[in-house]
Image (cartoon, rainbow, N blue to C red; front, side, top):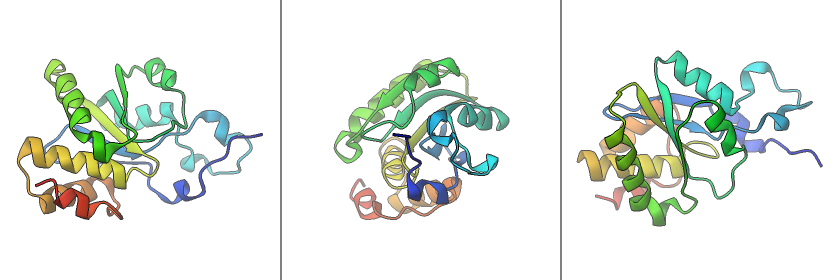
Length: 172
């Protein structure tokens, strides 16, 4: 049976901009290349790990770490390593495991002094779980209030957080 493209996945922009005051770039989950075989999607809708890395490089950045907020991956993590990504962390229960994920991000960034190296964070659409983790980091580590963290995330991602805003506000 052929692997499918999640129907809701298509309507979301693949990747956002770097979030103000952070080294984060958020995106929807890239899909394995085999999901696109014979799918009929236009070339600009195809979003794989290699396309992700290419787009980040075009922004003058290098993807060093990927944090996945998905319970199951729709790509092979070995593709990240093949494309030069040093570290991959999976956090399937982001609302329960945010502090653990933040510690891993902080540890990675403390060792990575090159400011052009970024951390990529994603969930299926790159919006709700991604927004929760990213905003929680900005609240706890940067001292932002929840509304400013949400604003920065939504501005950079290009989509509004749909379901986790109340959870984010409780992080203050």
